[in-house]
Image 1 (tube, helix red, strand yellow):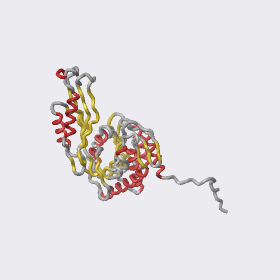
Image 2: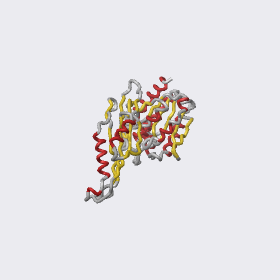
Image 3: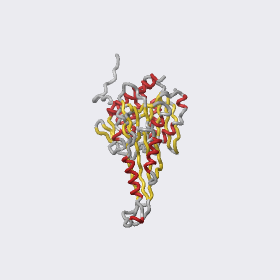
Image 4: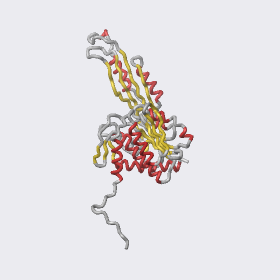
Length: 357
């Protein structure tokens, strides 16, 4: 007589909801602080995740003492790289979930998108694709040091790299163009003196305000795709007391550019004239992409690592989440957006691997 194993008692176990697993993983990632300069712990977690997923070759690319990028590949050369930055802006935020929505620093910029990429890559690996990998960089939120360093990985082009899918929160729309960026400091000098005697001193603050007003009123370039150039006066400082002419003053300015930066910077310097010095200028030109046909596209006003990693291969810039809540104290992403991101990254990865031969 055949013996049967006894049936388990109690209520049957409910199947695991994939969205719950996704949410739990993201919450775990968000609990790991990866503020710019402090990315190591998160990178160690990701290295283990990538190995478990099937990426057998993982290299650390040194960027600065204690900081490195991760390049993960299978046993084969990568024709496709999924890429994003692992650092976040400060401050670190408590992690919580409210229904479909997960809150925490990096939820949309860009740990949520990275998780969607990893799940998409697992799908491709399960389908037999091997010519893919990951490039995860540090420092995007400050100076793009990781992406700048990644350009030294030029051997990837020789090995056959053909496409990079770069993650930033674009509400899952593929980006057609991104604005450039010009950041600089304006400095003015005055002559300190008693403010009651206007012939005995000169206010550096007044000089600075005059220069800034000229810049605010200037007719900056516009573009039919990217729209207008914008100018933001981010910080102003100077002076010692209300009854003293300010001996020095300075302002930090950031412009979102729609045209090449070199002539834009020349205009800035001309507007500064003899009254102000333009110092510490850092910039990136606008970038125009080649989005695939059949997908919803967008233009973005913010700066990304695409400026640098596009030297390795053509870039598709896209990701789940809304940049308008990035860097905010209520930064969040919806699990449904993550799931849509997984599907999109899977489709784009498949398209890249099957058409870029």
